[in-house]
Image 1 (cartoon, rainbow, N blue to C red):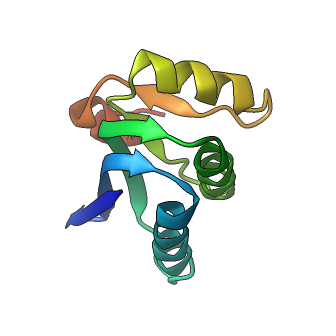
Image 2 (spheres, one colour):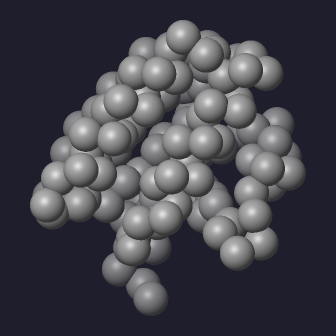
Length: 115
């Protein structure tokens, strides 16, 4: 998996590309951990448009990272999620802490502005 991160103001956008498996998700987990340990926690958008394959061990670890991020005051926004990934994420989310899945990055930015 290739992780491209960019910052726009106080928002970090992760673009995920390629195959998501156990080995590659560790880098994503470490990067997210560093970001969330900062005093000023940024808003996070995870763009999954370029994500093509998820191994079973990779999806479990990925959901674990998303659930950890979801505990933040400003929950991350998942955008450009394929229907296959959305089905998996919906099956693994919790009622108390659902994932916020939006159509595109613009909607992700707007969702942070709208209560």
